[in-house]
Image 1: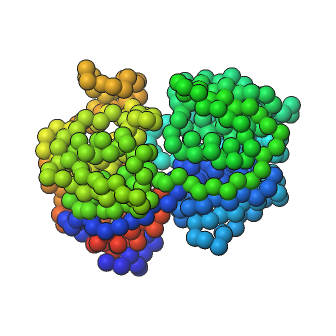
Image 2: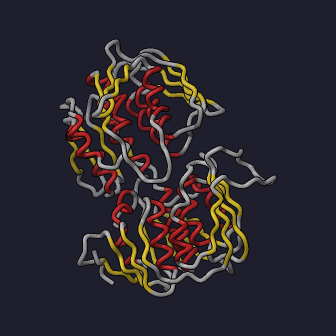
Image 3: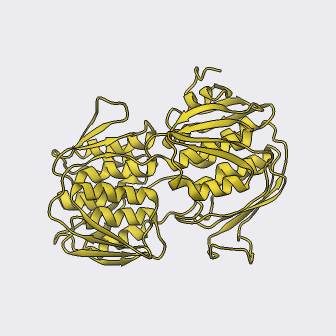
Length: 444
């Protein structure tokens, strides 16, 4: 039904119908927002293409505009033109007002230190999926020579003597910390060596953006990245990598609802690990030139999954997959090794009839490929279990999407509240659901 008549925070969903049709994915949220920040480093305007209309992009746009950057839409949908020539300092209050729950302000630090000699970070929010400490970021900035001062308003970072290349080894291949080092090192004096770096496709695409701007970045084996600082960078013209998180989410929706969804813009190479698990779980897919077709095979089968940094199975993929695994015949196990609190969303699935037991200290197993981590949890899913409608509340971005898919899989009506957060990472979410034949109303 037409998604009208409410604020977009509460959905009434009538499930039990397969999702069928086509959806398009644009640029990856995890690249686009970082490439927008990178535009601050250029001395000429940048053009970013395939930018999705999601709330995280709006947050970064607002933060750039608060700092005096001109952000204009191009002639083609999804095209942004970013001109940093008028960049200025902003106040804590302004940054806080526009940042909302986003953690993106922390990535402004390096570019702003180069541009203005000062960066401010208000209190940071984000999804409730576990502690995401900013000490990796602060330690990296200190290594470059930045001075970090904390106050009741937040954190003030200055670089009275400029920034100098550093030798940095991350204790964990954090995506955010790797982005921080890249955005800071490209204009620092001298060479930076980053060990134990994240190497996600979105990181490699950010490196491509920075190289277009004039940066000198070498990716070595064993997660080592060398950055030779340069004095000047120019603007870029770049088409963002596709959003593999959204592509996998729709694939899992097809699997859970026994539907058939063609994800336009999806590419095989950056989804190899996901596609292997999808096939093992009983999914069928067909890779085509303009996207990938996903549907269920003969039956769903249980799988054992361990999340990990790239090239492992992404933590963002496990939540929608678990919805599908409630319909698989047998016992599935999902080991979450990236975040310590990402199974909270399963409480709603249990309320809907799923048989899921979360082990807060993880599970041992001699089949493990990913080394055990102190923070890890494990979810054991027994199926198949028919799901029924319920009243549920969205906990975070990927968990929220998974709740909606669970409601579409379940028999009867569900009322899902807090769905507004889904717009952080899914463009035109309601329109896509409607195009796939979902039966829902926006009621609040």
